[in-house]
View 1: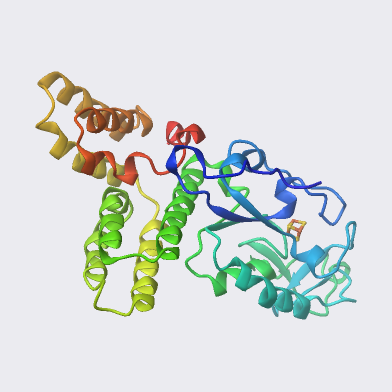
View 2: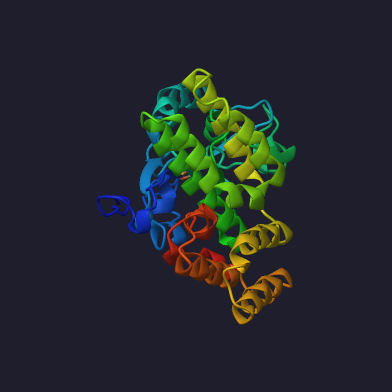
Length: 332
Ligand code: SF4
């Protein structure tokens, strides 16, 4: 089965279209060891029309068919058939060498959990030379990483990654989607023949989003931006990309969101009458107490920033980080 095709052209709402690598079975492709799939409803439903997929099934790509014997991880880092008659570690490394250059311009990767090839963490590892029947099928630990996933994440340490299971948590899902869109905006900026003032504008538009993640990062990144025009462009891109990705990798807590919301409210308040000021503050406090989702104060602040024609505030990516129809802030 082929993965769902996105509509051509840019995503609605002026957002970029992230390029998202994904374990093929999550898109419904019948590539699992048993000939089945692990279709994920969020990926193939609400998200499908917003991203360009880069499907990868490492076990199929190294020449194993479906159905096929199951594989498992050994504590020495190898990936082998369960009876240890075939070792696929070298083939996985060769595949990663081949695929990773293509993956350099993706904005994120969703891996299938619990797979000895694709899982990101907590996988069972077995003692080498001790087939399961001799150890009652017991692993020596559950600290393994899927072999292909480990090769990709080691080579692309700033890439936003998640597993399908974790994406069912609304907070983790929102954070991951926010990261891939931020990554895509930066990728698009650096793909152009950008000028220092474009980087200054980019950094400024992301101010509140960065503050919500890691307040100290905004100023530190500002020092990198200040070198635009004097530093070699490639060095500056590497520095800024690293700092940007690290800031966004920090999951914002409710208190940091509240702090960012108050930062937005502060310059806006002088343009609002007392009733509207009170409404916005009440919405922020209600969110802070966990009684209202983040979407409530965000909708009010965005409405007032646009209504008052305060371009600096209205253009903040914090108010519109990804397509609104994903409804992710309604659940956090
Ligand atoms: S988990 Fe990875 S290797 Fe296994 S079927 Fe899915 S894409 Fe293929």
